[in-house]
Length: 227
Ligand SMILES: N[C@@H](CCC(=O)N[C@@H](CS)C(=O)NCC(=O)O)C(=O)O
Image (cartoon, rainbow, N blue to C red; front, side, top):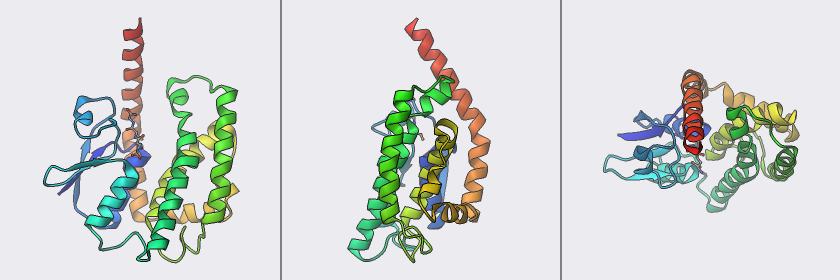
């Protein structure tokens, strides 16, 4: 059976969990947080999610895990058959990661430590997000799914990216970023209504207090070391 390592407060973890559930693959969850030797032993960058296969093979990096799952378990496909169309799905995922997810994540350390985000950081983030908005405007179809008629990996990927983008867009930039891509809010709402997305959201909310406690304890330990 596949083991999915990580924690439910992580949107990256949740996107892989959504893929496994969508493809109806049996898996077990192993609760593990960042910064542990146990995690470094299976994830070169010490990041979650990671999956472990029955034969002890470990793989990390969400988009790589998505491809690996699809290649290993092609039934209930999440990529189109046509190679060009597959590439477009991956292009949407990459653009969402680079120009939506990663800039939005720059706010996380400030929010967790309860400190003000410098205006210069906000300006840099805004600039990258503008690039993401204009790229996704060109690429996303919402007819009815992100890449067209078939629900693909890009739908699952962008949906979990958007959890971070919309949270920090509104709290840090006072900006409804999803509204900048016509059709995205309606599609996002459809995605949130699926039984899989709802169960993952319930698990996220359950894990959030423990995750925040963990991060605060890690920050305290770091500060004590510096002293
Ligand atoms: N590039 C990685 C990023 C994953 C990532 O940032 N995971 C976060 C949780 S959402 C993490 O492991 N943080 C722990 C740490 O940085 O120590 C991916 O695509 O999977």
